[in-house]
Length: 138
Image 1 (cartoon, rainbow, N blue to C red):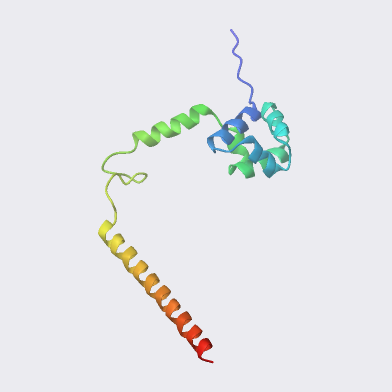
Image 2: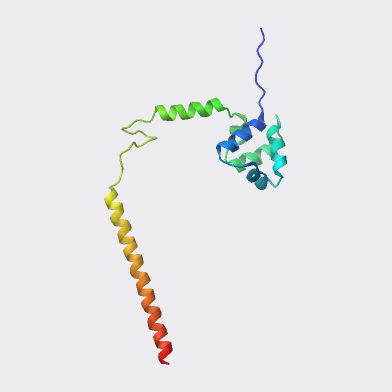
């Protein structure tokens, strides 16, 4: 009995990572300085030169190795593990539904900052009026 392994199709991996990043082919093409059709054929390629792979990886915000080792199964496992490790009490990844600050304090801080900004704007307008009055009196 023989088993065949799936080929390491770099183009499909690039396409999948691009999609997960929410990037369109046109955007990737623009960043690479090539046409959208070239990106389409790049994503259909089973292999890619290292230099081209490096530039694609940089634009996608991942490493060349991340593209080479990418698999949908790993992505699913990552998110499943992240979800499984999340608890209502919180942990190192998820602080749960409890605020780590007092929301009223944040509201008061925002009010104070807005009040200072308003006072500075009012003062600037008063300064303008004073300046214009001086100009009129001359």
